[in-house]
Image (cartoon, rainbow, N blue to C red; front, top):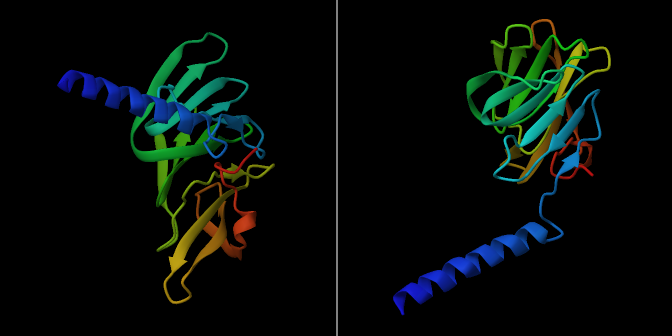
Length: 190
């Protein structure tokens, strides 16, 4: 009797998980609309990466604490870059010299695609977060755009901003308040 209950419970949970994945509101695999390269959200927990960037030279996978690289021509995996916290998205410069990966939280990291080392880690503006968003290099690679938000307790509402970083030293050059509809959400992309 006890074993039957456990099996029924487990089968019921599996059925609920399947229904949730098929629900209209569930996150589905999709491409992001902005950027030079193909950037794909892959919500399958068993996938090698949550976020994939396909360039001329690489297929890059971003998942939680690591970034994995595959040489597109040979299919060979290159050394991964590890030690991050909750990575969710990224972008690659047009010349494929650098990429940026964005944490679900307070930081982004610049990685050399020549040496596969972290060149710089940057903290977002005080009290702001990057949550369920993606970053994008400008067409000429001179700026990086990152949408951010914070909760304003006095107004009892969220404040949304678009940050522009120059891409030589990745210093903040502007922070502009925007409407929620102007945020680049990876969850809402079709």
